[in-house]
Image (cartoon, rainbow, N blue to C red):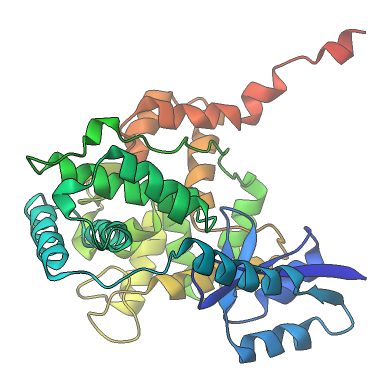
Length: 372
């Protein structure tokens, strides 16, 4: 019988579900409303409660065996580590709160985004709580190594979490004088290098043609045709569509950058039909209430429904459209420098990653096996 594994996550209110790639298991998991696909490690994230567990057992009854050993072991291991290493964090002191509030105001003055500020503030708070009894100005670089070994690695927390903590520490101490910690000597963890996920043109066409709803069809089509990020699509306003110049204006996207991308005639026709039907006011794509921005979760559900209709079992996310846009442009002969501008990449090295997944480049390589 097939097997799926239940595991703990860094967040005690969530569990992780892993299974070998199998169409039946994938679509059964996708049918659970609370299941969210995590493309970074090819697993599902669900709420850690009795109802979820009962739903999992009901969904896979007679189909797969539910392995909870790692989930149970993880709970025991966490308790053991917490008792042995005393990693339970103390509340912030009054002085730590003042420092964190000051740091938050500093980030606001530097015009960091709200999500970045929230991430950095939470990360710094975790770091300070670990050194509850030690004054902030006495913390040094050895303490950072100690925190990494005794808190992050001991609990097997993710590399991305570690990187967020390091970023927050470096930024805080770089802005402060008279501290023992030298931010230049704090090193980030080594970055993972993953290839972008790319769909074929046939798969893209099938997904874009799947929705019957005009709004849903237009949203997915605009993401692919312009290589947009999810947030860029949702932040568009009607005036950002410049039909006279045939461009879409992306305002204040990642890195606080504006850019323009070409607007294809086919997309313009779709947008005009959509605009006449829905007449959006504030946002190009609004929710059920007027002037309310369309939600990220609803957009993800649109994709989920489209994948189900065209029977694509790959764990596709909205960002796959952006990767596919860049790769298809490269395969059609578009210069990398133009693709870099269209995607809004700061470094050309980021854009060069698509040369590793372009079939044109790969298919031109002759295997030595063919010459035997």
